[in-house]
Length: 471
Image (cartoon, rainbow, N blue to C red; front, top):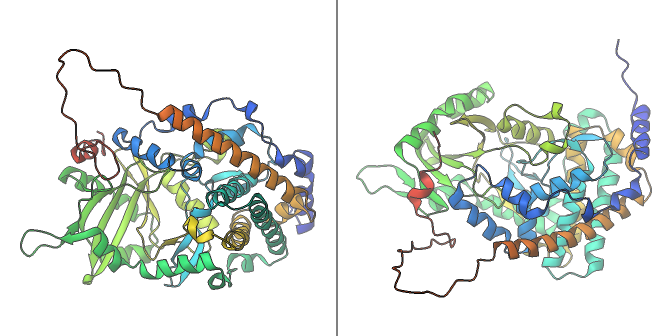
């Protein structure tokens, strides 16, 4: 019979990992250890994306160092892969940053606040999540013109709260960890604002915002054309997207299949979302249930694979990337979207979820003043809960211990990597700067120029839709 290790033995395993990587060594960041430059890594990550939307992704990244950070997961993943790690493998979010926590509706209808973006989720060293979220706090503070001491205090508050709650979870019955809830959400100003946004973000609100009455008599509503951000698809693309619901249906629990069967698909569109996901294929389906006042919107989002995959044990890699995201989300979240699932379209793998169902996110401006510190503490508690649900809190607590070495090291790392991020952003700005135009010579005729859309992209909608579903 297999020996089941005691909590004390598991804590001892965590303490033993300090020999592999001492806690104070988490402060390390050595730019010279980079094997490849950030611009090269970003260019490589664009392969397979819709070429006409790559410019839009770069535009969003160039808006600010934090915008760059959001879209540069492949760069940080490569950088973390060059550093020594604890070897304590946990399911990680992979893209933990201040704007990837948010409010959404739980299956029972209550609004909850939790980690809410899992495109990069994978089994990897637990500290990678901490280093990414810590860095985002520094960059966010910089965007708010906060003092260096305020940024340091926010990171320290985040790690201290994580440490405290990991230790708390290590002492709890396992079933209590599974149902542990955070009860102070309304008292934290930034979270309260996100919950208010989520309360207003109903399916009927999405219906009004995303659709319009069709121009033919007695027709249903259809998606608006808001090119290039929202584009109705061709008939062939519509058939391919709706056909993918057959595979998706099998990934749902039986009672949820029953609920979905009562909704009739009305229209399909292509949607541009986020910063890191721009250029990937993303579809939305508008369904109608018990009449026009019962809309349902499903998002079918392409998942090409985690940016961390090259730097982790190959045994942990999933065969279907949509399933990887769904399993990671269910492992880390307290409650998840009841319509989470996955499917395949034209040999590309997708995650399926509800679109904007009572979702509300944090804006950087919400974190001004005391908001950054308060929010950092909440992030620590929520990430500790996610890691305890999907890993072993006893091992984590054993490694981190009760002292300040780990916390102080993470503060130093966050400051150093935030500074590196700002340098990388400047490098990308130089790389993306258009070349100086040569003076015109002779009487060469000029080619007609396409009119730019709202995003600044000179892309016609037909060019986008033509590349969505490659044969």
